[in-house]
Length: 638
Image 1 (spheres, rainbow, N blue to C red):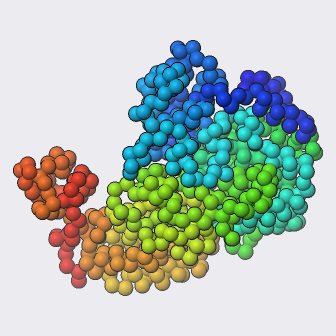
Image 2: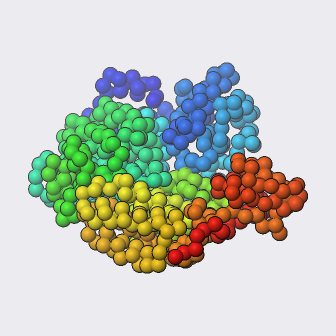
Image 3: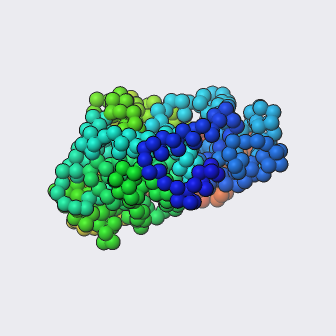
């Protein structure tokens, strides 16, 4: 934080009018020289786990030793997650925008000497395209970044998430100032409705309509709640937003509170996100000190306070009514679908709940206008969407693209395509989502199109799978997760998911029977129709979508007792193709069981009695000589 404003903050400095806010913003901007050097180190959870804090310390020491003049003290600026998680720890040098990946503390002196003193990039630390091997010097030239449209992630990677003045310099709180100073609550709601913003938590309900219903609901007090209970495997969009720009979420919540008439707010965040909690606590404290939260915000007579509640990590608490029960200190169990939380929510009072990404969009909608937001996306799905792109893809990380972008664009253009084997499917929508095959890569990604495929938008998790993925096992994995996370309150979900999992496990272990596919479909329909909440209602999606697009794999497991992908260990064995084997000894050297024999430059053989099917030989072979074959020891089907 800038020293002068830190001192003001510690003295309890508060903005008491819109004029004060504008003057503060102008003073901050006047003191910043965009042409002056600045070295930025990503301090998102991923980069911190890879040693980013040590990198920052090493850079500070190297800069101090070189006696350099830099834009911030102490020398290095920390930010939230830059999104390119597969390349961390990340360092960016401004104003040139030099991008360094996988930086280690031992690289610090060379970076300072070459980039800050000599003005040259350190070539070995530059990002290289996995396919073409082309190296990129500037972050703006890297396809992963320049093919995105960053709205929610606009400040992440640029601002210090522990410094409210940095957020204000980047345009933060201008939306709030406009909302409180120039608009009525009804006008704010109409602006959000006109923007076409839909809930980014998975349901896709129109945000403006929800706010309108809450505003009209009878009962006091009213509450605004942020759902940060992100539980989907492989998803970390909300966590990264809270870690990288918590001020935008708080600003969005405050605008929502003014619009619906609430004076109290909560952020329900899982306890497994300690860094997000720490940065939220700091952001709330600073917002109060500056008069942007709490009593008499900006001197305009509006009071709104936010508290943080940490959940215990139950997946079902991502459902709105279960979340609110947990917030009340009760067991997190969903209520009947006909209960609307905008009328009977937290403590049975009108409650407006949106997720992190939804709130983060609101300040920009108010600042730039509804038409600006509505100009992005499709006819029914406006704006952008943040996805966590993970799995068998070259560029893993956070991706923000306009609604309507194709899966192909996300996976291949931004994500760089699959790592080794050909693309097979992408799983969208979290554990209750569906698997979309390669034949549908060109569909536009919006709420309606994804539902048509048997998947859903969900909160934005995308798991890329290649040809070495068994789709039956994928369905089994997600059903196992959902069985563990079901609250057990209603019989269709509790018993239905359990039975679905039993059938899938039998199929994967070679005990599948004729009629199992039809039984899975029939049982799935029952669970979808009769479950109490969205967890049970969507739980069969992984089963139904994999049967729909990969029925041949189910039939192979059941009829031939063979797993073509080589995942279900009871249903395959590795063999070495003598025509393809060069005898290079790569598999022989790496086999932990010494199950491979053969002379150098001659075909090798796998001893099936010793083989544990660990796949090390399969991965090590550069000539595709290790192949998946039916298990010859498999008992014939009765």
